[in-house]
Length: 163
Image (cartoon, rainbow, N blue to C red; front, side, top):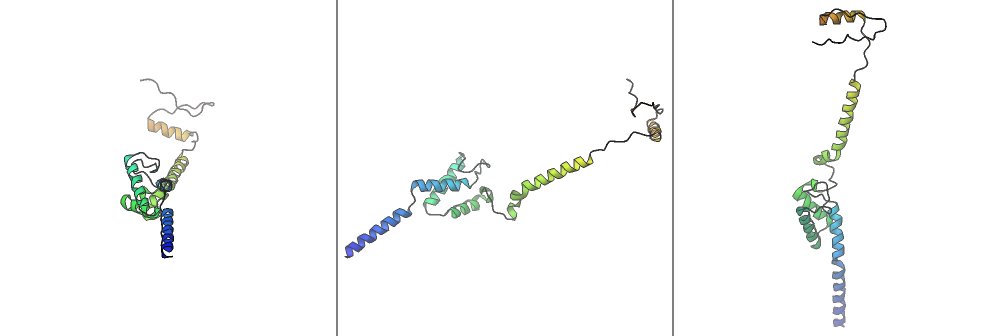
């Protein structure tokens, strides 16, 4: 009876240990899912999963090893954040140190829109033609005789003569 209970205990332990150990396919899936959430530090706009840089390959190896040893996804992320900073995360946490990452694009858009609006509002409005007093004043400033105004002329100055 004791032998039978011991054999059952060994079988239950073996089944539990076998079920708890991740298979290579499960481990590959976890490594890939976690690598999709992390940024390649060399390429900077690719995930670790997409990058073939030497550092990315090394980091994927480290992630695999940590997951194989039983570390959780969050523990692996925290390890990489401690080592490389929040930049390694594709979705960094919202905290004062990362406000520029989160709100920088919106701030830049607002600055560009404000500059465009300001440039448009400063555009010179069409000016009215000069009256006779303004023509005389302009002629005095330019030390030229005032141009004669014709009845069908549009306030244009006479063409400059070649030197």
